[in-house]
Length: 51
Image (cartoon, rainbow, N blue to C red; front, side, top):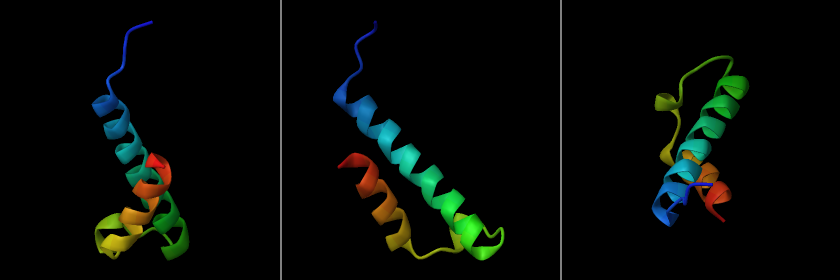
């Protein structure tokens, strides 16, 4: 199995958090894009994935 760096793992978690935030926001808003959401929503989802 190839070694995965800590940096790569964090990047993957950040991207996963962004995807989760987009999916939640689209569901809650009826299809709007994440670009319309307050920044803190992204921060929360990213932090949840990294912890």
